[in-house]
View 1 (tube, rainbow, N blue to C red):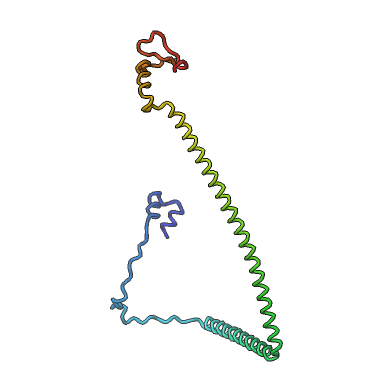
View 2: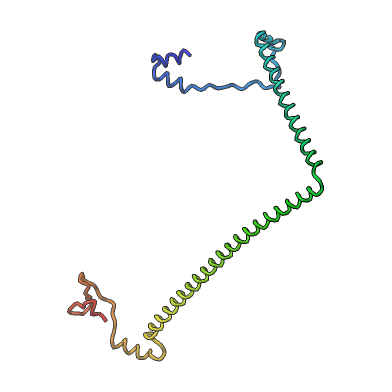
Length: 214
């Protein structure tokens, strides 16, 4: 407490205040119960504290009030239960078999009515679910058909391109003609491009424009 008072009064230095704040209290482990009572406390009889007479009287008064209130609550609840039992028994005794049968039939009628309402709501919900399911399936079928049409068009386009390119293929029938054409019109890829995009071949006197290349 003196250290805390010194800190709040400004007498304590900053380093001591930090050291005090970092101080941690360690609670040592209590003695195990199986070691028994210490010899110094073996024959010690604890002194029984005496209560004040006014305190004893006040506790008695509060205890008596509590017991009285709880007894009143229990009696009230007991009377309520007994009254409910009497009313129930009276209703059973006064009710004739015809009235009991009429009440039973009314309960059955209400039960059937509730079942019909529930069945109507269920049928409406199932119909909406079936309609939504049909629309979903139809949409999926349309998308699948469209994908198949697109795929077929792509395949046909590839086949058309291959057919166009097959006209330039070398076959057994035109291989002799292709060899003669290659000998007559030799093709070389040994060329260079300038900044204007003109071709410069080996042995050419003038550059050839790229848009004039065959």
